[in-house]
Image (tube, rainbow, N blue to C red; front, side):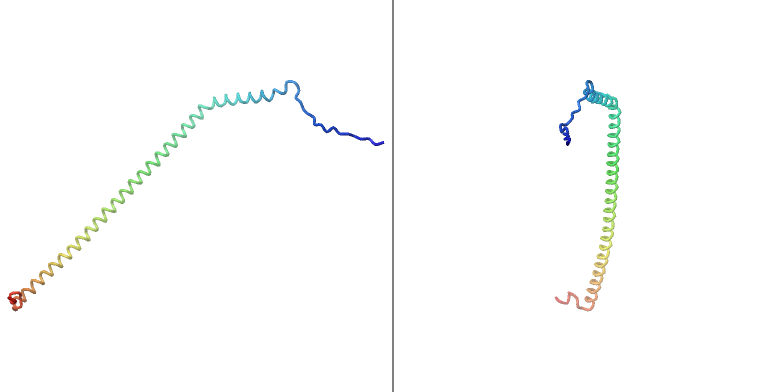
Length: 130
């Protein structure tokens, strides 16, 4: 004789015993209550920390702004000094060139006067053409 065994294919369900089903909900609400209390307790400290961080960031931004303004002033001063120096050098070159041209003109005038005087003495001047 062969024995046939049939296995139970239905799933077994675990049902909590009386009073244990509400434990999860009690833990959930208790944790939420504890979290709210901890949040209310630590909120002033967090606010102070955030305020301090905001103040530090504002100070850092002001320092960066001051440094940028100072560098801008320094650069402006340096460019202004370079322009002034360049203007002075160009005035010096202009004055030297003007002096050379003036001396050259005086030299030409002296030579022309001397040539006119020589020509007049030799009888070759402008009076001869009349």
